[in-house]
Length: 267
Figure 1: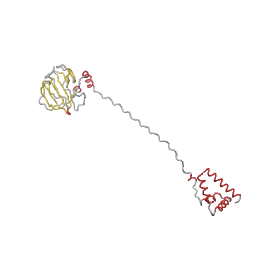
Figure 2: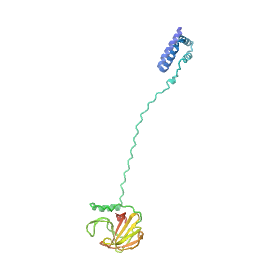
Figure 3: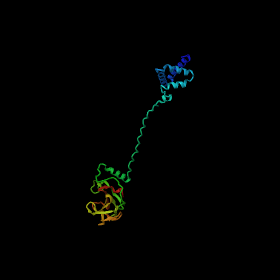
Figure 4: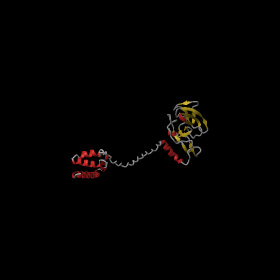
């Protein structure tokens, strides 16, 4: 080997060393290829000499590739370094809690003025228990209705001082004062189911209306006998003071399924 070939081999060594810093993976494969080439039992000396001669003639790149690709397949740099680092994932933000909707305040039920006035009047009897067969509600009636007589309220529904017994008693109807003989009319369409004369009510008439409603007309001076079906406003009796009464008036009661309601809420 002459001096020129020596320098060329040294240059290859230096280049291989530099390659280890720039691309270690490629340098390792090239080194393996060179080792295989120069360690072949029959051609090791000839391979080095031939490589040096070829490099000395100036055909460096082609001779290098041709000589060593027979012994090792060198992957391109792009393949060796193609794996890109996996980007780190940002932490998943915690979900923002959905605010609970604020419930709208429940409006206070509107009290009918007639009910409010009645409750105020009954507050004087707060120590007394309301009978189980009485309701202070004011349901909407499912039919048309009218006042049964042209009169004024002389004694209201609820607790009162009884005018005859002179003690607090519950009054299950409303007394409407009017002159004797004043016409009494049906509160609503219905069927007369009872009429008669009793010690307490005197002459009376009872009418059934739709949906379980019933009305009673008492202390009459005269009543319609065997009238049967009646319409709202039909004359069914005349005002009087029969039975336990202190003067001419109509005692008027209103029931729903055997529960007493305040007639003053509707007349």
